[in-house]
Length: 306
Ligand code: UGA
Ligand code: MN
Image (cartoon, rainbow, N blue to C red):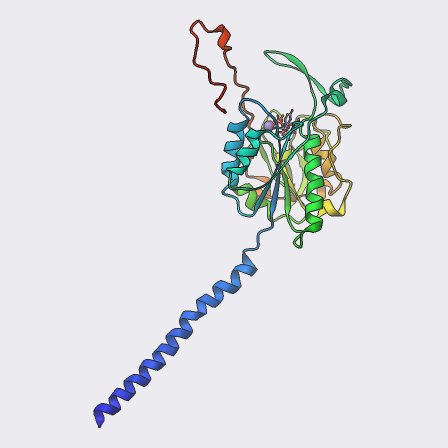
């Protein structure tokens, strides 16, 4: 008899243990389902990158895209400066595994270079040639902004961050974490630009009080394109905000920022603008020896994409 009783007790204790274990086991599962929604919301970053055909283009795009693969919730808007989309960029984006939108618009050089207005374009002399230099990326970024506005109007979630990214800059992953903190417009230092080691907003008591720029310091916002990002919904609130061909070189950043903010309202990021998380690197133009100048003929390589 006692043996039967003991067995019943064991069964009861066993069942109790099972219920207790089940309860404790299921608790973390609950937490896993609930907390991420609350704590890990990441606004989409829309990276806007104009690009144009040149020998180092695929190399530059490869370096940039492989950084972007490590950024969560990122949408890359790539705009080719060309009449037609090229196979190189089309295939490159398809193979990239990134979320992207591929657009194209050709810069109408006759519109600005024949004007040769010293206020708008610069007469540039380097070791090899002299030429008129006008701001790049204007039409391309404006096309991307048109696309973005249409996209956001159709989207349920209109939150996001807009970042204008040259295809040859160097981006730390940390700069993307910083820009997700933005309310309106966030700013941070840019390394190796404007003739300086670092060009940056100056911060006093947590507010931007000025800038250290030495190149055209009279610009309303003397910062590089890589040094700020904008809350995407502001582009819906300011439907006319865009870049312009009518402003002098170096003023494109000021041209877009003037629609959204004033110096005193800028949000200093990257530890109060004390950290460099992006560098305005520029890829050197490769110099290639013409095959016709070689003493010994080389096998043809034009069928290989570089
Ligand atoms: C600086 C700024 O960092 C750029 O954001 C700004 O657009 C540029 O000056 C300017 O105002 O011209 P910089 O290194 O001199 O940068 O310019 P690039 O990197 O040569 O060009 C900026 C972007 O436009 C790049 O993504 C590039 O691929 C693209 N681009 C350049 C074109 O789409 N078409 C061109 O003819 C040249
Ligand atoms: Mn560049």
